[in-house]
Length: 432
Image (cartoon, rainbow, N blue to C red; front, side, top):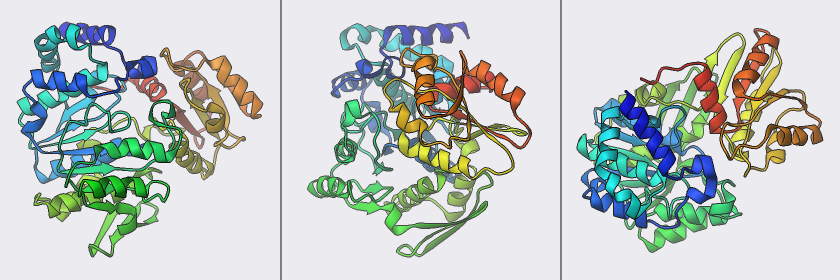
């Protein structure tokens, strides 16, 4: 659809995009999103929502919750970011991308507001999602924040529940250089008398959430204190003594970060049930076990090929890459090859040092302005004594890896969502 391609080009050329230019694209208040949604008739007030923030896992948790609600029979809107190949990945209803026709018509309808409001790309996409969900009469929307929470464009919703998955160091230049400071920004999504689920109990942050929630009379639940997981290969038992609930799950592909997110999801779903939402046990189980297909979840721990096993994952900060490195260190039967690229604002030396020195490092640069030049990345790898080679693109690096690997080897592709996007394009996934 030529009109759609031209419309998306217009958005990228006219609106500042954080993923490409960084902090310059981030607005420090909610003025723009309020102006846009006011022009649209405040569409976000037309349906109930679940609002999710956190450093890691918020996208996965959003997809898990959406899948369960969808399995139950609800018409579910889902807003997440960033996208990998197609802008429409950000906005879905029951796993289906927003239509190209709506994207085009929305841009035509709101184009007159752009010179006056001058929104960022993210603000514009949030407004589009809210309006689309209203026009398509969703019964509930699951909304993931972009950065932070307090000043995030999604933070104009008044949800049924607020969810904060966890806190770790990421985007320090905008959110603060301590976990306490970052927790303060995430706590900005807490609303008066709206239940708050915190996925991971962390002593460094708990008082931030308890103080803010207490002031707003919002009940707080720390999911990791109520639920525990026992993992035996693909069989996962998750139990809550407080709720007297036991879930036996069959999850064939062991995703390193998944179980913490399932625990956060289960606590969130049970609080929604406490609020009167109709959600049966069998749909909780089927929603979790099949969430990748149900909610059209991509970009995290995607198995792109076997023999050798090729996995792509968008983990890009220390906490999430630690989990990846731990998984890779357990690989037996072959060598581990890493295709990695990063953006400039990361502590790359610290991130590279997480991985086993015996791994084979194939270094490249994400194809965006913020991408760290591959020569700079190679210098850091050399300082760490890593066995590294450089390549001009992910595509070239992947071809080189596949020439040199054996069937029992493992290839990991990541370091940045842009690197994952590049490898997905290489594997020519179908996004129609």
